Structure formats: C-alpha cells, structure tokens
Image 1 (tube, one colour):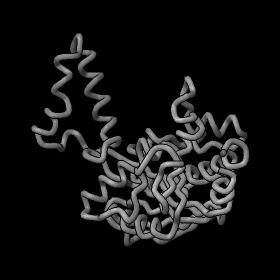
Image 2 (cartoon, one colour; image 1 turned 90 degrees about the vertical axis):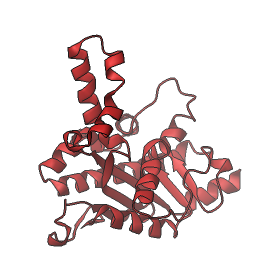
Image 3 (cartoon, one colour; image 1 turned 180 degrees about the vertical axis):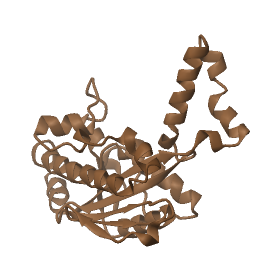
Image 4 (spheres, helix red, strand yellow; image 1 turned 60 degrees about the vertical axis):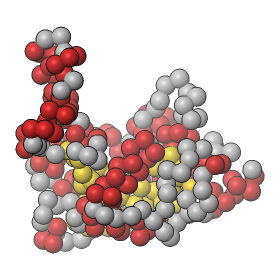
Length: 247
C-alpha cells in the first residue's frame, strides 16, 4: 500500500475537464422531441408545471452526449501545471489565433479533432485526474468519440475503485475520493471543496450552466478560459488530496 502511495504521488497525472452544450430543441425532429418529452403529460399536474418541465429538458440537453456536444476539452500535466484547452468556435476555428492562458494553450478545433488529440495524449499517461469524471466527463467523451468513429486509446472507466482499476489507466475521480466512494452523507461540488481547502474556485465567475449562453453569444474564448480555471482548481485539489487524504 505504501509503495502505491509513492507511485501515485511521484507519477505525473493528466488532469482533464470538458464543457458541453445542448442542441437546439426547436430544431430537432418531432420524433426526438416526443421521445424527450412524452413523460411530461403523465407527470405534470397542470400546464404551468408542464412548461417548467419542458424548459428543464431544453436546458439540460447538454448533459447527454446523445443531445449535446463538447465545446471545450482541457488537459493539464499535474507536475508541470501546463496544458491545453481545445475549444469550438462554431465553424470559425481556422480564423482564431492560438493564445495562452495560465500555462495552457487555447486552440480552436472541431469536436472530432479535440477528441482525437485527447486520446492521443491519454496514451502517454498512466494516471488521470478529474472531478466527477466517472459520472460525466468520461462517459460523455467516450460516447462522442464513438459518434465520430474514434476509438478510445485506454479504458478510463474500468472500475470505480482505484485498487481494482486496470494497469496503465488509473482514473482518480476526486469527487469519488473526497466523498469516500459515497460514504459521505452529502456530496460536495468542486466549488465547495475548493472553498474548504483555500483553493481559488473557478465557479466564482462563470459557471457551467452559463456555457450554452456564452456559446450562443459567440464568447468562445470565455468558455475556454473558464475551462482553464477548472483545470487549475482540479490540479490544486488533486495535490491537496494526495498530500492529506490519499492512502
């Protein structure tokens, strides 16, 4: 067990995070719209509640890889604190110059190109760190990769428990680790853990629910910079967990 601690502590890990948006519900075909909303008539008590449920569905389309897409995919080396954020500029990717933000290169790419670069980079690492990556990021990334006919280079979902994960791909989901695999009575989000440990929270400015609106307004760099903040905070949280809570 002690040997395993040393390995995780000294091996550089790949921090990763994504930002997503949903499709325009009104532009979907009728069959898809019905599939997403047919349960509302059975559940809503009145028209007002039905409208509220419909609005929630429309606002939540970015939470599923079947109705959403990745508009920013960030990666960072935990030791070097440098990395990249690949982000969508809605078709204007070639017109935007690459810049740097807090040690991360910001490069505009199509979703398929983001995913191809991600899996190419994954091959070079053994340890991977996310916050709620098992519950959201990795399933989303894997499904969107399949949509683009891209095969993942490693299995980042092999097992929830670190001791049982496959050699060559240890995925440290900090939400799982800091919540002791669900043993804690209440789940903390990234902001709350950062606040508790004195880490600057990326949620003090933009929050994930605003990404769709920012994208619609053409504020693509704002999304990329927000993703950088998530990477930096996750890396600091990873270091804190490794030093004080990892066994």
